[in-house]
Length: 244
Image 1 (cartoon, one colour):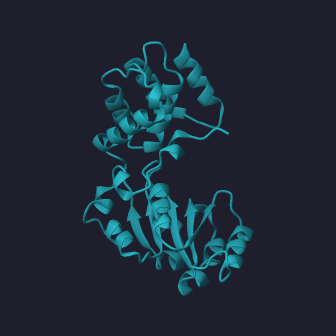
Image 2: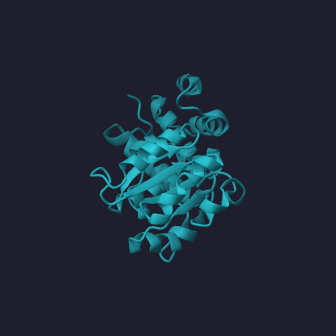
């Protein structure tokens, strides 16, 4: 089964997360909360590819709670009921940490179905959204959550992610990488780590006899930024273009 590079090299500690120094730096509020072990209900707000899911996974791994994930674009009220049915059973001895992605797609009834269990502490909610939570999340939920804003990753931090991805993805079969490749990708993807890793993945898959060139990076980063779709035809169209 195809496994995206972003999943293979996803950070497992806060120190490995790039960007977000305002909340994850040495004295950042979110870092201090995670270190305390007392995880409140939270909303992570910011653009795609800025680490919201990664940080939620790291938090889940540091608690004794059972992690459950839902994506509000596809989940239904029955999915929520299934999680509620697990509470106070051997499946969730420490309670549930629910990571709810794209919460803005849940209607009022779906969001409110969680309220009782958030209030009793049986469910700890970490919700993420790319939209302004003060417009898209109902007040009853929002008033019980702490909002953390995730910002686009700056180029200097992005370079770290690109270099790490190149090193880990190529492994022992490392091919030469032309000077400027990491810098170009870091500047070109608009602060979105997922797009940067998508570009790296394409470059490695389509590397020629000369290795990874700056010209290839310019093509991969541009296309990744505009219309990269790893599950659709674009992935293979771009790979074909790189190979040519």
